Image (cartoon, rainbow, N blue to C red; front, side, top):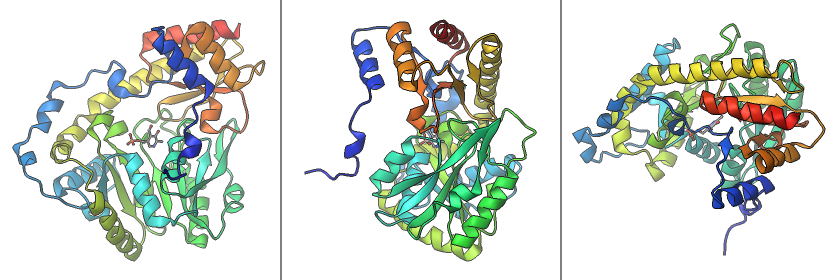
Length: 386
Ligand SMILES: Cc1ncc(COP(=O)(O)O)c(C=O)c1O
């Protein structure tokens, strides 16, 4: 009766089952994985809701790529980031960044073809690809003092069925930015194999190290490049459901991509009208939200480094984003660590294998956790590590 696309994703892991059991019993869980900004004790400006009551929202004016007003606001956001002028015609709105990926997979790949994506990285990519009946082939990010991309590992994985290359910068959960030198070799590979690049920049506004020479995909002129982001991380408002794709690269390829993306978006018209009218205002208030998030992340990281300094735990360097990777002693497997913390300390962490780390044991923690809870959770982690 049902397609097999998501069958392999139905099985629940032991950690999820234990968490469900504990919640059913009413046990209070200290969650060190939370990355929902609306549940992270941030102070949102009160006038957010009033921006959604624009009376123009009573009129339905379907527009495949999104209302011009909203696309202009997105273009302005890039301009304010110092990345120059973008023609709003090269912007396509989506309901989220996840939906942007799904649109691009429909645009670029036929069933059973594949896209290349980093490992470790964002687990939802596998679900999104499975939903479009395409495969994700992983290329490794290797950790030697910092996370690095090795271009031969990418070229070795490219086949005639490969349709695009995904880069996530800064990456979730490694927090590593794609450097200019890495981009130059990626670009050369994409040109040689005629592959477009999908560049997920949802955490762009949360750098921790301003000295890093990160590349700018918005300036890309030679390789067809799709830059993804959205209100979810830029303004900390995932519930508003607005993301976008910025199309960069050679003019004619941009036109061809635009034409096809327009048909895909027009089939769904999934971005609601009130958020599109509100988006100029919502993008303006990002400054105060981003400041709070950056401060939270900085404080939690400083605390972590202090508390770990005399312990057997080590936090890997974070260049940006909302997560930190912690190396724990290899006295147990990753899963055993996460189960131990949940079973005996009522503390929830993500084991590295959720993100397909090559080695173990690593745990992934959310730096968005409110400071007091974060401190308590790290205390429990240290106690568990003995
Ligand atoms: C790297 C990355 N890309 C995309 C997304 C999805 O964002 P959205 O909420 O816009 O679908 C996430 C969500 O956590 C993410 O971590």
